[in-house]
Image (spheres, rainbow over the protein chains, first blue to last red):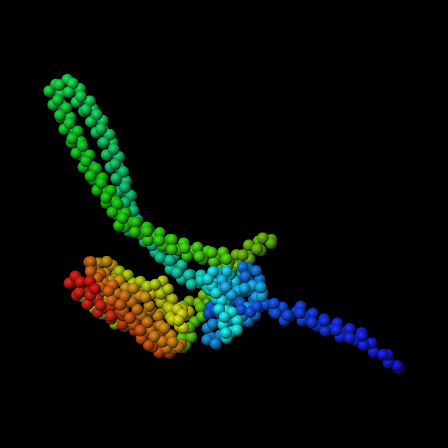
Length: 305
Length: 185
């Protein structure tokens, strides 16, 4: 059997084609070449980054701009070194701060980059890269606030209980009874004043008539009427005095007992509402935080027996 | 049918409770009591919010944390007030005395250097008021400890409070003598 002459052109073409296919496979299936278009930064934190893993997205203003390429624990055993690779055209050296974001209700985390004036990344010679500062996530901030909120709510309930205690209820009853009495006194005083004024008018009219008539007997009668009027006025003055005293007592009760308690309660409500606002804002942004329970890590001494 | 299934599923899911393990309550009781001649009204025992909780705080590597498995019977203010009422029986919680005592605790926690060693810290300020005169004193307790287990740590907290009760007793006695003369310090 005679062997044919090898077709070198065909073999060469096949070899070149195979190498091209291999290179294309490497390019599309790995990030070997793509990484050249990325820039590496480091983020150092002492907070827990549960849910974050290698490959987790890095978002800038909500847009995917890179991924987490490595997470290491530093030599001090406390600090976490998170290496991120982001698009080269994005400059993160100035006015950028990182935080831990949580995606949906899955519990998976991502690195959230935001603009914040005055924040500056620094160059770390050991890491040979820029380090972006990190702030605690809203969830971490909220978890710090929860004991305060509970304490405020407790104080508020105590104050409310205090305000509606049987002792205060009695005071309120007494206050309302005093107010009722005062209103009654005021009504009778107004009625009395009206009749006094009408009496004064009558007396003045009679006085005028009598002056015109210049009758001595009538002058005597008028004098008697004046006396009665003076007595009435004296009585009304006394009633007015009693009324003023009653008003003073009521105002003292309000100033010394009721107002400070109301003020205290209002302050408590204000404080709690501020804390609630932060909590609601967080729950609105991270609804999954209601489902995630963060377990406290026991101190090793607690485990000793 | 689908709707009924959906409603039932929601009911079952919403009835699931997140169960958290109960913490052990550490009760601190004075081992010694101190007598006094005058009745003194203890108007308040207060502390910053991060201390005034039934969680027991500790410091480790410059961080304030709370023990995960142990707690006080009530908040710190309540625990200390109760302790002092028991240690100093002449203290009363109702305003039936002209002498009014207030205490502010601004530090009470172990500062661990290692897992078993550290310093017990208790810092407080005492105020005693009588009519328009008053006396103030600071109390600082900072003592090294070495414990094997958690009960050893509770003993150390008890010792710190006992020392504070003793110091408070002598402060009240001295202050009453000075305040009688109408001097403020």
